[in-house]
Length: 305
View 1 (tube, one colour):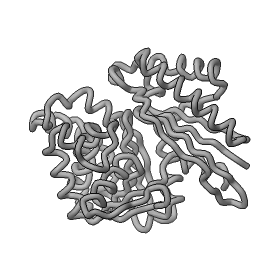
View 2 (cartoon, helix red, strand yellow):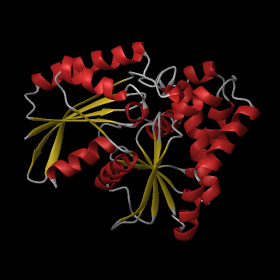
View 3 (cartoon, helix red, strand yellow):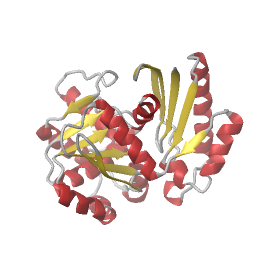
């Protein structure tokens, strides 16, 4: 059976087409488009008209690709931007009317579960771990070990939300940094309480910003990393810390010139780095991994298991 998975994130829309047979899958096609659905007024819980139209047009293009691949089943999921927007249901209705695709709006809890399923499928979970997925609208945390999911929660502290609210300087000022970190500290109280109890040893970053970290680190060593074939990747922790300091202290233009950062993430990567470093420091974790498998692959996992 051929299945198409559409993940409508706050910043990026993803399309994954796979062939499923005998409890396994083969990826036939994968793409992503920087739709920026949360542009402008995400903290007001509004999808602005320009972003609304970009979303519709992107899904029309996805529909053409899906038809060309003779897909039998389509699973379309919307996350934080649509979930929290006052006109999110209008967007879902417009997509059904104009494109013919039915969208499920995931709760934060459902999103976290699918992320866990995707990361588990990658084989990245080798010990007691904390999974972190930094989206534009929300950040999901999942505490797990090799056998089970222990605890999960979604927080409305996504990179686009924090950037629109706090990131007003170039390079980012101490005041902006402190405002972001104070906000994170306040929001993540229960995460730190559960992690104090379990003491995870590894932080696993789910795709997104962590793929950018991996590409930046490999390009600094003049090596090539193929994220299309890679399931997971173990970071050199000291190299990551050095990179993170460089990113936080850099100007917008300096980041533009760094090979490995896509235009969408030039500023968002600073927010992602601040969140990651705060969590690593607060939980005293010094092992960092990337899972290229994320929510999309979680949907696939449910489809064929």
